[in-house]
Image (tube, rainbow, N blue to C red; front, side, top):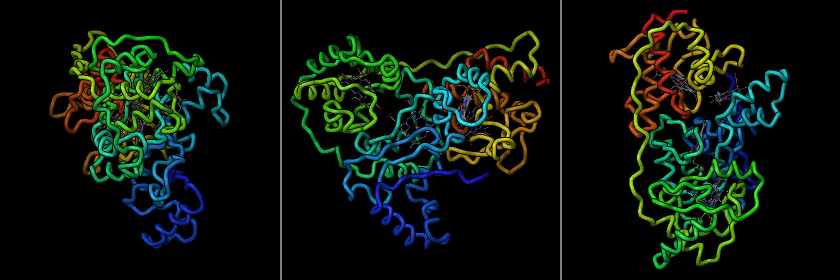
Length: 430
Ligand code: HEC
Ligand code: HEC
Ligand code: HEC
Ligand code: HEC
């Protein structure tokens, strides 16, 4: 598999020099010259970020107001989207914007544009160091949860030891102070804060899970319909803001979100200083009722009718799974994160792109091939077990040792799972 091209940019020549110097001291730069740049010391924050391939879905612009001391040799937080043939969001966006390069036929592009819905809108990580608490990020990376009710894709559930999560969090949140200096909101009027949210369009975009009866008002500033739709999709549920941001960061966000995150999608809504403090206090301290998680749906009995491979291929494997479990030949050796590896996973050697490939199964712990079709000790086919586990993750009850599939994407409907179960029960025929 070719080494992926990944460039974390250095802010300027000084930090470039510092970075190269740090590399020289730490690894002796065996490859010599500027080649060192592509081989950061193993275990360093930048190397860990590279290993988990965050830049296949996220980018992060520079944080211009960070001081040199805050930046450190690698300048916290900057991330350039991976090349188009590796980047899930990069390629999906290019497809939508009609900018997919190379020689794809026009009819194919029109057909694909209709099919691609996920991993187009993904939040950027710009200004993460000024927005997030480092400890929140560590927890989120190790046990992600849904942050945006209108966005279907979620952060993938990685297999990430705490050490790696800490290194990544250090990269994106290089200083635990920064914009996080204290502001005192203890005197702010929560009732008035609620009114600020209700009368300034905030709740047209933001959910606030666990806060009952919030009224909505129209967004008070003019926005292009597309920008508005995108901002509505990417507005975080304010329930989690208290875990993510300090009071000072929330107040600063409400004053000018672009100063915190230069590519912020939130429109500027003018508020007085008092209103900002009241709104921040309400966001950070409003009483939260528990939120109901979606229930684990009931499993459906196998169908009476015959189900052959062509149907499960069309409805399940080629529709969704194949995009991470494909044939590495024909794609420069990249069979996707679930086959040849990616996102920090070594890959299970599982190709779900054809009948023969599915028959070959996955690589087990001992390097031997194992069936993903035949029921395991629990009486359930691994294909089905991993799809059910995704429902369990969404219901907030991840299954120990069984990662939900499709990874980070909405669970397959119970009808589709039923289809696969029926196909398996009938002997997984071609
Ligand atoms: C397959 C795509 C994918 C990959 C790879 C990925 N993420 Fe994400 N990430 C997402 C999506 C989608 C969301 C939005 C989730 C939500 O809102 O519920 C997200 C959200 C986040 C957030 C919250 C941002 C915000 O503004 O709320 C952080 C922080 C984050 N990711 C960090 C990372 C890091 C660090 C890595 C690498 C270790 C990474 N992500 C890899 C898809 C991805
Ligand atoms: C080089 C371009 C390209 C890259 C890179 C790419 N995709 Fe796609 N993706 C496509 C196209 C084109 C389709 C539509 C295929 C079709 O309709 O048959 C698609 C469809 C999908 C679908 C099914 C439609 C949907 O929106 O649910 C999923 C899931 C998906 N891709 C996931 C990923 C993930 C995860 C990655 C990163 C690991 C990725 N893709 C990287 C081009 C790409
Ligand atoms: C048009 C939609 C829209 C409106 C209206 C809006 N926001 Fe936002 N808001 C967003 C988006 C999108 C983000 C995330 C920005 C990004 O990641 O680029 C955001 C982020 C935030 C955050 C950071 C939360 C976190 O956990 O990261 C806070 C706090 C916030 N908004 C408060 C408000 C308040 C208060 C109002 C009303 C005065 C408001 N917003 C109005 C779209 C909106
Ligand atoms: C976004 C990428 C992605 C998508 C989409 C995806 N997978 Fe996976 N899959 C992975 C990764 C990564 C692994 C390896 C996980 C690990 O090592 O724990 C994996 C592993 C698996 C395994 C083996 C698990 C094990 O522990 O041996 C099965 C079975 C599986 N996937 C089934 C599916 C099915 C069925 C679908 C479609 C419904 C699907 N996957 C869609 C990324 C994906």
